[in-house]
Image 1 (cartoon, rainbow, N blue to C red):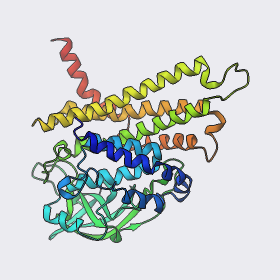
Image 2: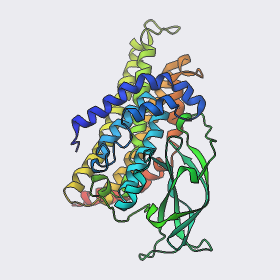
Image 3: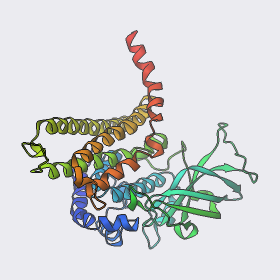
Image 4: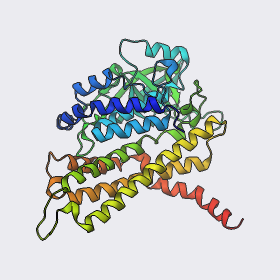
Length: 393
């Protein structure tokens, strides 16, 4: 349900304009384990922060599906930049919809832009005290934290013994605490062989008091804004932006492979690799798989956008299909990248090889909790009964 075609095109054009700089900085980004200052500054100057934040709050107002297309394009420029920027953009736009207006105005009125990063799923107890919570614990995977200004920390509401305080529904209350970055201890310890430049550092929150109005619900809760993303709910929306990262990595791998195999000769080949029938047939199959995955990714999200804008709720089937889409799109992308790596030959194994870097990035992307194969199991639990019922109709 893409509504802002011209606006989306404008954001895509902004990313493409930055792509040469980002690729020029790619080696330094990987070596430094974070987005370099020239790229951080360029992203800010291009007005790319806040593209999913509602227009009424000074943001770009893109729909989730539209923002995802921009994430895919940024990932083709560099996967680490795409990932880190996605994490902070999606996290920022997500919490915006659940903060009270006066609190949000306070947070967004500082000299620095309001950009959130951090581990948002509940990890530690947050001790409930008068007026808020005391957060204390070690957190991980704060992707994009180097360019963020606020850090989120997922917690569950607890008493002073650490025992959960259940909500009115009898369930554990999971929330996200938001703190100025200066209040947390970022370890600067991100050191991996894939997605190396995402700055996904560990961090320590040492008995920091967070006012209640600086927290948002992790799941459920009542949104304070009417935009489409907040009609999705966190359960549906949470993992969606990981899919375009996988698509972007796979697309770039095929681009690099096509360039590498054009005119490339191998021993015992009578034609260049790129002209060999047995290479071309597999390339066509992998490219078709990428197109199919892309169609399914955006179809799932756009159908949900249409439903909620028509006043319909997010259903169990929609959630199941989102889970299925996330896990499956990563499987498809990983297979495409493995194909590209194999046919890239010696050009894909050098330490400075761009195709080699994208191959490593893909392997790390598949390790994320939100794209685990268990999601296919959960999705099948919803989809199988529907198919069985259809057979007996």
